[in-house]
Amino acid sequence: MPTAPKWLNDALEKIAPSFIRIVKVEESVYLNPYVKKVRLKGNFTSLDFSPGFTISLRVTPRELRHYTVSYADDTKKAIEFVAYLHGNAVGANYINILQPDDQKIKLAVLGSDKQYDPKVEKQVVFGDETSLGLMLSFLPFLRKNNHQFMFYIELEEENMTIPEEIGLCNYTVFPKKDVFRNIDDIQQLPLLGDPQWSDANIILTGNVNSIQNFRKALKLNNHKGKIYVKGYWLEGKKGL
Image (cartoon, rainbow, N blue to C red; front, side):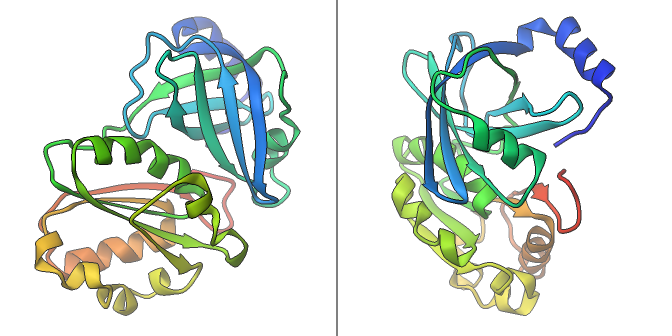
């Protein structure tokens, strides 16, 4: 979630116009007071929405915020993302004021980190509220290609029902600041004790402290599969 001088953000928009899309808000729905789903209408026909495809919204002249495309319709004329509204932050404030029919919203298309490997049978995605869009982006590919998969999600108490509401499956929910803040507790998870999952792709996202602990536990357990890491936030920091 980068911060840059206004002149630099202005310049980037001018020198890379192919990355910029002008869109309108088609739908803006609160799933609860802390999680909001936004649907944007525009022309995305030249894009390949692979799992983890990211867009960037300029929420102030100096601040950008990144969101994962959780859904793209077949005509590539509309996309959706899920935003976590955490505290009185510029990103949350911007998303809060988005309303249906808001026009001329400017976004940048950033592409995917290619965390998804269709050749690997077993896939695990870990994260928190900030990772829900990523998990939704993975889900249709995991189903279509007959993967075995799991979602591990650490959530605040008020958000425990959100995975079911947005249509996730094969997920396990954990309380925030609990299991994934302790390496010994992580090592007790059934996933780490099951040799059939020792070669799974593991995608670790969300809170940096939880990611670091999970990664250490996997390394201690001699995990054979690839481990992808992408921290979205860290306590005391604006964003990553």
